[in-house]
Amino acid sequence: MIITIDGPAGAGKSTIAKRLAKELKITYLDTGAMYRAVTLKALQQGVDTLDEDALAELAAVTRVQVLPAEDGVRVLLDDVDVTAAIRTEEVTRHSSIVAGKPKVRATIVDWQRRIGREQSIVIEGRDIGTVVFPDAEVKFFMDAELEERVRRRARELEEAGHPVDREALTADLRERDRRDQERSVGPLVKAEDAVAINTTAYTIDEVVAKMLEEIRRHNQ
Image (tube, rainbow, N blue to C red; front, side, top):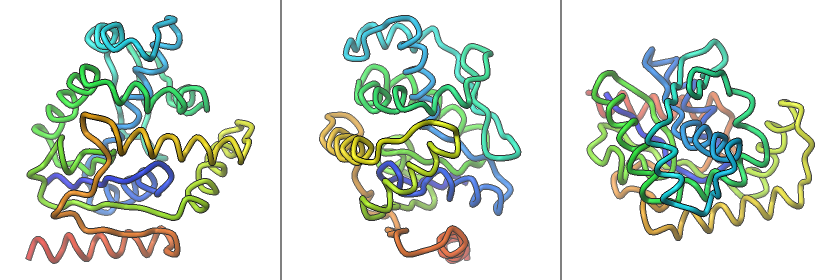
């Protein structure tokens, strides 16, 4: 079974996907971590994140593993653990630019599809239900009000020990939304057959319960 969760940054996709996968006892795949890992490598090697050809060449010789961990996932970049390093503000700022490059997306989408052919997964991102797995059994589209998304992302960064500028973070999320929605390949859009959930006023448990109910209904 493939369950897709799409939505903008800060909507709660990663947190919910981890919980849902745990409840269903299947693999959670964080696609954003893959783009972040390639972005981190580009920044480390001084590759211009606007240079699509250079990024594509980099991705082609990069090995990214997203492995199950007690608190979610571990991310290995060329066999080096970068789980914390890919969550900095600098990587976050550049990753949506990298993710908008068609040649980079082609490589990473291939990684994702290969994993999906081998096992049942809960997978989240921006275009999973529309582009990566358009025939997925169950699809969700998660959203939340911008103010709530800023609050969540700030808390995530603070808990990881990173300084947070709320005003800059708000502007960054707005810009990421614009880039995600307007990019030419795999734009952020709700799949026609996806179940929409606005998470602003719901707890994690409530959202997971809604999703499990939908999955059970689908499997009847």
